[in-house]
Image (cartoon, rainbow, N blue to C red; front, side, top):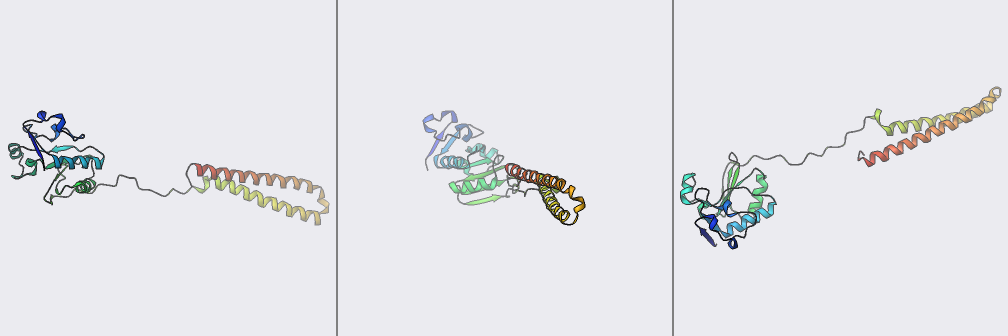
Length: 224
């Protein structure tokens, strides 16, 4: 695995840096400014960034031996070999991040939920630390639409009016027939019953129109 070493990150020639989402300053030792570039590790880090599609906040990458001792790093820390990175989890779901890191080839994982970062390195395969707590699903639960209040339903009101008027019109026909056959003394009322029948038919038609309009309007608004 090719490794490039420079006394300071400012000494890295632009032609040697091929990882567009990271800068040499991010990867350099925080204590001394020196930088060691393991190209395989950097290629996997860039692949992880591409796979996740969001920034990786690098808390620690290469560490010089003296800086590693100063921060309490392990004596054989992979950071000194430039094959390890500590990545903040503030903008990542740890489970999704780990799955993506494994997919691109990282093998070593250290979990630091209290400090808010995850350590990843090229291996050997191992893991340590407390697991990150599960995070809630970032989607709101889908709830069934609430039923309409029947007393306020335009559909019910329109349908009720149509039904009542239809029944009324049928009743008028029945009454009219009875009067025509048995109540000859009140025959003059029959024409008025014809008028009432047509009024009730008109009300029924209006009720049907209201019902159709309400259903179409509800459908347009996604209420049904």
